[in-house]
Image (cartoon, rainbow, N blue to C red):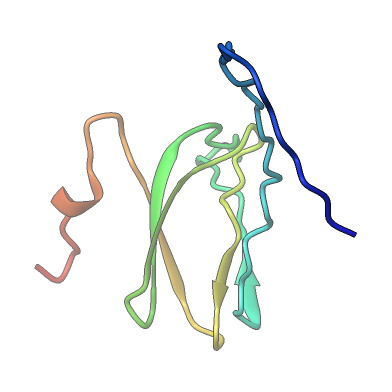
Length: 104
């Protein structure tokens, strides 16, 4: 059901095209780990460390970095097997690659 489209004119005026803003939904992060952990980091008086930078290292050596939430909780960490996770709270001047373990 096609037809012939023919335009006859001495002059064509071409206008600029429209701009369309595309909004893409943020997809949830897929975590394949069977085991997961999120803890609240607190001081000796049981007061939470809110909005503080930290890093965590799993027993298998996998490293995670994040910032605690408004209640001092870490982001959820997923692992394939049950293992120990070591959390290190960072001071404003500390960076994860500059911190040495007690074994060094």
